[in-house]
Length: 213
Image 1 (cartoon, rainbow, N blue to C red):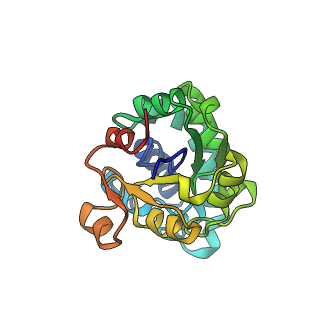
Image 2 (image 1 turned 90 degrees about the vertical axis):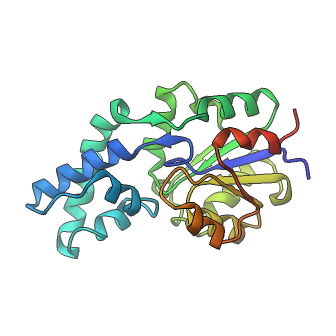
């Protein structure tokens, strides 16, 4: 199969956002007098959306205020704390050069995804940047990916989903897409292999080998 489009997860796949998320989460926990978490713990907590992240560390009565507090801190500090994952710029720009249509399906709010990608000069390469703030249910619900396919005018069979977590495998399966995973983010190689994705890559740059030149 020759893939003609790609849907990427963002955090842990294209962006190393963990320091920015950890900074905002630490500020939230400090604000509410709660014990801190390490950046490694943060890495394991993320991936299911902001509300789910907050729900893992705070009781229900504090969560609405905590989400607002997190959003403000993250908007201010995340751009200077976020880095591209190794190989991300190469992969995205090379696929775009080859005429591959690109989309983002992330449980991060799309307003943040677009802000961060724009900071690296990559936002305009994506036909679609989705997130729960646009009305989509968080992954693994397939709605965001299906909307990406419509925007790219691509079929599931010709589109590769690329992610770093077990939830990404579940999302791709629900949407009917083949899926490649890179164990450089929140899920371990063993966790990912247990979900039987179509491709387990050692580095993000290996994605290029799955597309025609």
